[in-house]
Structures are given as C-alpha cells and as structure tokens.
Image (cartoon, rainbow, N blue to C red; front, side, top):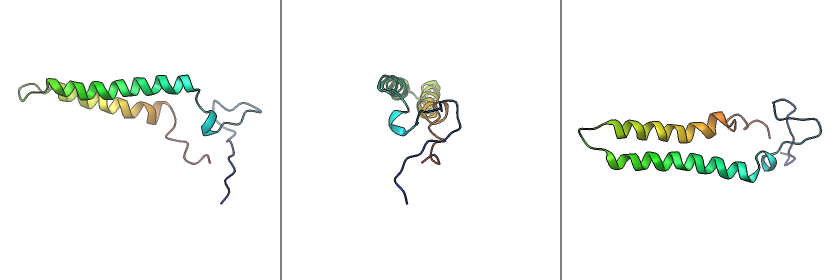
Length: 87
C-alpha cells in the first residue's frame, strides 16, 4: 500500500500543473464560512424545538428540514461525498 497522494485529472477544479490534494482543496476562509453556515443551520434546528408543543407540529418540521440541510449541503453540494476513491 502506497502513501503517495495522486491527483485525478478529471473534474472542474483540475488545472494543468496544479495538484489537488485534501490539504489544498478549500482555502481556510472558505472552510470557516461553510462551517459557520452549516453550524447555524444545525443550531437553528435545535432552537426550533423550543417551540414544540403537542398542538403545534410545525417546529418539528422546521427542525427536520434544517437538520437535513445542515448535513445535505456538505455531503452533496460541496462535492466531498464523491472523493473517497481519489486517493
């Protein structure tokens, strides 16, 4: 088993002469902004539960939607879910 990291030659972010590795995939500022957005969605989901009563099911619906977005955005839209076979 080799520990050498190789870059794939396909994909929109691959440029000639540029090696795309997990270390240089996102800039630090971009990663921090993405983390803050996803954490805000997750904490909003938890906060919506404070309005939950037996007569009002809508806070639970909001919680499920925000919770799903908080995990769906980084796993699908940001494209990290398909990078397992790159290395």
